[in-house]
Length: 399
Image (cartoon, rainbow, N blue to C red):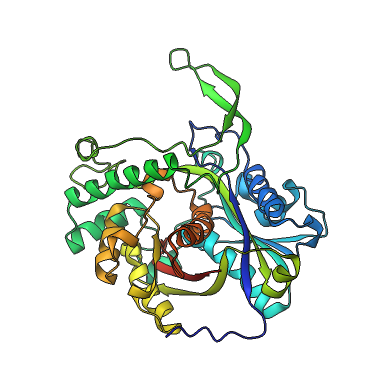
């Protein structure tokens, strides 16, 4: 039996909006700053909630690389870029790939615990403008961290290869999963199941002539995720591995991407007073640590904590969104937790759609609630592996 320990105040997800997800470096958003991405998602979520921007108490945005275009508090700059008045404060959270979900959860906690009425929670990442030759890695490898956790700074690709080797996940299984993610995402897109989420944007894109190297500006309108590409198992299995002798390829790993997502989180009584039909209720979040060299299996530790706290089992959850950082970690977590494949990432995920690190958690919150409502399910869980060796899992109930 579910145990939510519901007090006098509850937080509901009143609205959700996201940008399309663009391919990093060569996609539509390769010259669009993080504040513009965040601002577009925030403005759309506020508009969909039918509220005045001045009514927002705070704007909490997740970002895994808060520097450069994403620096100086993207929660605040994103709110200003959205056209919210200067009276609306902002905050940035970094829990790496679960930053967007953590920001949404924090927005909910501010409503439940701090007496706020309306808070924006979301996430953003501009990999094109931050994860490049200008990225600040000065003194990144701190010796005090290394003395206690030698693998803390291990690249994510290497952690995925570690999981594959340590737990015996085959390249074939990864490739079949990667192809299936594309198949599911394309089917969802063609059926219009992503249309309720995405807002169209007209932006300026940098275009390089392959023959001359000349870079010019082009105005483009993007209204769908750019990473979708029909893929068969045979095509995916023919791809070269990133590391010689390894198992990870471009077909069984998430795509580098740019984008933003936002939710308007509101106190339940206020939503009822306004006649807003929310997407669902925030019920709780759990986090856990694991060995940094196998960060991909973090959900194995976070999910049981979440379910135990609320008196639920794996079978009670109708929709599961387990971020597809790499197929290898999704497969291990799925099998270890006992999640039915027909309830997991049913519309594809980051392998097909893309993974702007700070955005993805917020995207999955909105998407899971929309999909759970379509299916007539009560509960959705969003769970993610987290860089540095962690897992996060959030529980939401359909309204």
